[in-house]
Length: 494
Image (cartoon, rainbow, N blue to C red; front, side, top):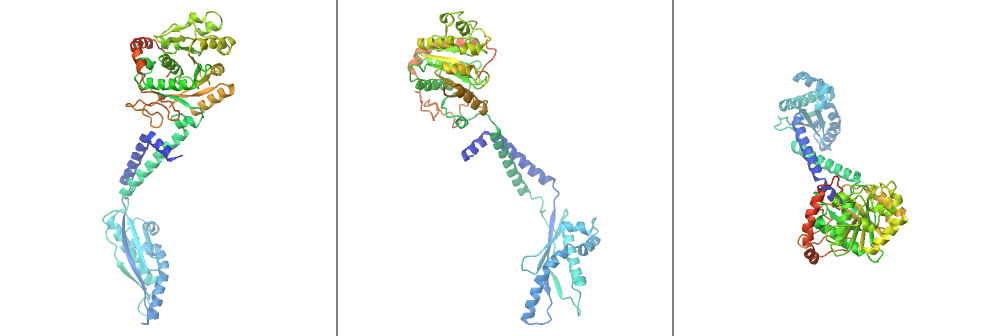
């Protein structure tokens, strides 16, 4: 991962990281409170060897010998021969071997010094133990290890520092424990955040889509939390970021329309619930607002929703035309005051795939291509049925809709693979439910009204003054119509 990706993960999961860090800090504070305080007292002995001669050579030999025997003496300090008398003297409730766990001895390199340290939960007891151990060690050296010869011992142990009662405990070290807890919580929290991001297969960003496909991202549809009641924002809220994102998609689609054949666009998704029907209708409305003649064809014969969304009669429609029960003009319905027409699905047939792939469907699309400037076909999800692939071969191209934060990467990859295998022409991707302020994914400024994907050079003018002036009365009528229709909506597709 790059540094930028880690920064995005931190920003996305900052709550988890902060909570984990606080838990680590609390754990460090709790450990400091629960750990029994320990005190240390230290004494130091200087080891010297008596020299009978007074010349320099004898003194050097004695100093050398004292440094040599110091390492042996260090091991003797924690032996039972030294500690057993201490236990008996201080009346400790432990054996000499157990006391050895709380006593340590060391010697600096190339020195004749021995440092003895005693640890105890009691400051006074730590000082008593270390002084008693020092006295017992000197006694053992003088009586057993280096017994007196000619009235004195060859080795002399001189205390250079007496064990004092410590004022502060050495453990727990509260600042260190807090720092370690804070660091551990931060590392664990960020590690969990990275792991979740690696294991999370949902699509969140522009980069996630680019890692799956080289198809261009034709539009980023800003999320609308009130989509159930404001499904057609292009007309009900024309100045909203959501409406502007549909107009940006419209502009991108117009760039793709380079020949007369490129008039039939099928809109699909990998799975249900990603917003393909809402995208189809808003795109068709946005195209109609430019003065173009547009028809929205409900190609999802298994789960039709146009009737509910638009508040129109959907009992007769596409299926009746395909089986020869009705003529196109009999079931084609105009919606609103623009040149926007709707062909609902009609009754659900037992063989949707066969009807959609039939010669009648091909002939119908050819007829619509000749009568309208744009034909928008709402196709079924790719992974659910094969209908989308069938329609994709008949249409000029496909737009694949995905819902950011919900769509899975493997699902999008599999859907594109299926369409490619079927020979369908995928124009690009439309990402819905995009957070309006998502950095790096969807950039816009309220002052300049510059919307769109920087990787696709399609910037629309700040405001379509002519369209707005011409359609003000349409917007007012559409608001009332759309709000009345939304009350009948029993299920919604974002």
